[in-house]
Length: 115
Image 1 (tube, rainbow, N blue to C red):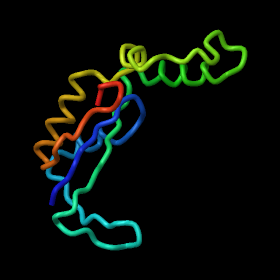
Image 2: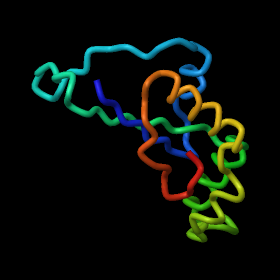
Image 3: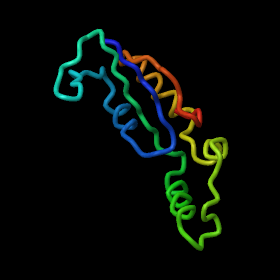
């Protein structure tokens, strides 16, 4: 079965669980409506990695949305988000290695280039 793997970046997800589980990924994909997918149909999955500093990211997200905060509505650019909160490159590489070993192909990284 063809599979595509698209990694995401600065939000919480289960990528760490996938790495911890080791081993080959396996499942029978079900399309909307309950139809089983043929082996030749591609399946796209997105993994989102936790931030290098999840507590700081959560704090910033709260502050930027809180009236009266000194950073209220002062949104960061993608480059600034990457610099401050991206998953460490070593973590991205571990997830990429796991994905290749599990039979996925890397279709691309998210807009911040971190995952």
